[in-house]
Image (cartoon, rainbow, N blue to C red; front, side, top):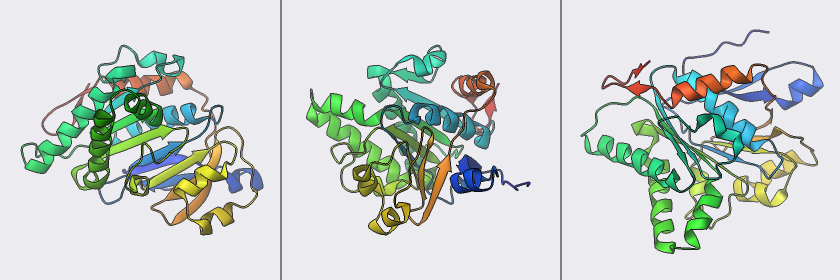
Length: 264
C-alpha cells in the first residue's frame, strides 16, 4: 500500500497493531509544520531502544525539513551512541548542552522581538534532559530553575516562531518538568516495557485503560498525538545505518542563510 505524505509530515515509526496483526508496514505520520505543536517528548528506561529512537527521529526530522532548517544536538550523557557526531559544529556534549539551549532560546527571543524575521525551522534535540537537569539541581538549584523556565518558554512560544524541542529522558519526573510543562508536548512517545508510573505522568486514565495489558519490546510502545490521539508504535532498525548517520552529520554542519535555506 502507498501512503501519501505532505512536505511537513514526519514518520514517527510504524503502526504496531498493523505490523504484528497483518504484516503491514503502515507508517505513523504526524504534521510538524507551524500549524501544529510539534514538540516531542520521548521516554524509555535503559534498554528500551530510546537512544536508537532518538537517532531515527533526528534523521527523519532532518529529512522532513529538507534543506530549510537548522538543528542543534545536546548530548548530556556523551556515550558512544552519538560518537559519530562529535566533530559536528552544532553538537553540544555533556556540560556544554546548556549552550545549545541558550543558542536556541536566543533565536526564539530575536524572532519574538522582530529582530529576526526568518522562520526556517529550528530544532533542539536534547538527549537525557532529565539527568542533565538533576545534575545541575544538585549543584546550583537557581541555575536549574532558570534552565527549566527557558525550556517552558520555548514550549509555549515555539510553535508560532518555528522553534521545536525534542526531549528524551528515562522518566519525566516533575522535578525537571514543572508547572505542567509535560502537557506542552504535542508528540509523546514512550518505548519499552510498560511502566504504569511513567504512563500516569503523561497520559490520562482513559488512555491508560486503553493500553491495558499490552506488552512492548525494544523500540515499541505508546504514542500520544496532541493529547487526544493514542496509538501503538514500532520503531524498527533501519537497514542503512551509515546513511542515517550521514544525514545527521550533515544536519549539524549545514549553515542557514538569511532566507532560511541551508547551505551545503
